[in-house]
Length: 333
Image (tube, helix red, strand yellow):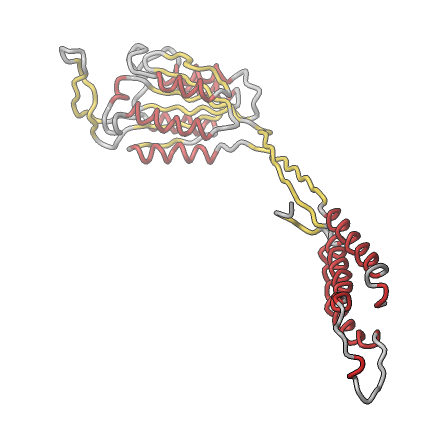
């Protein structure tokens, strides 16, 4: 009952200093309560001291205990139960546009670019507790894999299902960006963000990246662009073997960084370059820090008063002291 006790009026504990003063006063004044008689010899008065006489100081002890309990009750002991509830007051709608062209199977990131991205993106999605997220995949064409939703389980499941070969090969950056804009243009969120990742140069699609970027600006959509791929050459799929597997060869990594920088700058975002698994993870961590949702925390504090048992104890001790004084110890008063 007395765990995690706090006192609303701790200043009353100064009154406890009166208790040792009262004890000293009692010791020095006790002798005055017994009549004194001067006689030449005490032989005729010797008798066994009664039990009640020996226990009489217990009355004063009861009074001190009662006063101590009363003072503690006046200090108002109480327990405090604190609970919090959080709610997002400003969520962010995010669409992740993911390049799934054959070059995303290059092995400069481990085990390859696409799987490395999926692993990092999954961690990013889990961290965005208050936001809605959608997925767009593109290569030679684009489509919406998952509309924006707050159900992270659906988004993570859809992310895991992304594979190469679901679309015509190529790199249609403009199509991927335009499809992402289309998913966000009707959004009522106060902040709308696209994270577009690619490892190549725009070479497909019927929408120019610049046109798609203008649409993003018109709808107030910020775009973060990520170029993924090492500097120099990477082990990249170049043909099929007879068994249907890819044949790999080292090819020069070509990323249209100028285009990605232009898209990011025009829409108010930033461009990043991921050359390995570690930098890719750091980039998503950086975007996570840049795009913070405003979360409102409501704190509830419930106080429960605990002085009543002490007040009852003080009253009981006082009543006991009075009853004993005027019954069993009456002849000694």
